[in-house]
Every structure is written in C-alpha cells, then in structure tokens.
Length: 150
Image (cartoon, rainbow, N blue to C red; front, side):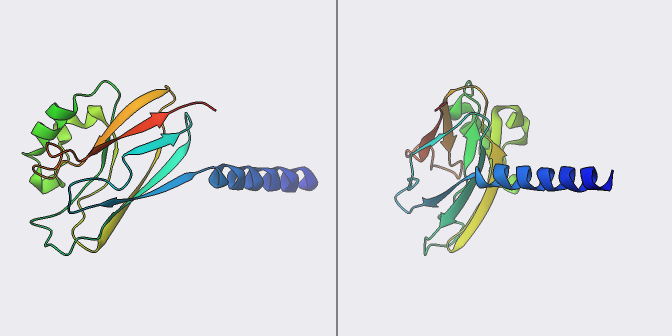
C-alpha cells in the first residue's frame, strides 16, 4: 500500500511539473509612444499564460502609467475604456465591467512592473487587450491575443 501511495505522489508531482513547463510567459513593455511592445500574442486553448507588463518610462506615473486588460471576445473595448475613466482608485479597471474582463494587471508607473497569470480561453479566436490609463486606448494602445489550436 505504501508503495502505491509513493508512486501516486510521484506521478502527481511529475504531472504538476509537466503542466508548469507548458506555461507561456510574455513580457510586454508599455512605451511612451502609447503602444505595447507586443501587439499580438498567440496561445493555445486552455494554456496557462503569464503576462509581465513593464513600464520603462522616465515620466511620473501621473503622466505615463500603463495597465493591461484582456477582454472577452464579445466585449466592447470602447465601452470598457469609457467605464475605466471613473475607476482611478482601482487602477482604471472598471469593477462594474468585470464580466467583460478575463485578466488584468495593476497600473505601473515608470520603472515598475506587474504580472498576471491566467488560463487562456478554451474558445479559439481573437481577444483584444488594452491599456485603460486615460487617453491611451484612444491613442492606439491595444493588441490582440489569438487563441489557436496547434
């Protein structure tokens, strides 16, 4: 019995390591030109994804901060961005539209970074990500996460 328990524990540990090895990590810089350094990302359905958002700006956070919000495929990015204007206390992430948001980072000022880990949607397709710091989405700070089976 002890032998079976040990074998099961070993199998479970190795399975966990195999899943962790499959996680995808993407580093994205928010730039002073109001763009993400990566405007397209491709992942597999159900894949664990870690996004590290880095702000290398020398400007103060009050002038040039960034966040990263991944929206559901049917979300209206303009409406989410508009609602974010009233969510300064929540890093410009509108709590009343949380049903439209898959994952998000916090707001990062110059020299700061934040990381978010999430499971990619199972449904293949294109998912928009945006920065909701005032004016950034309207200036074009957005990208597309494509979920695609191999």
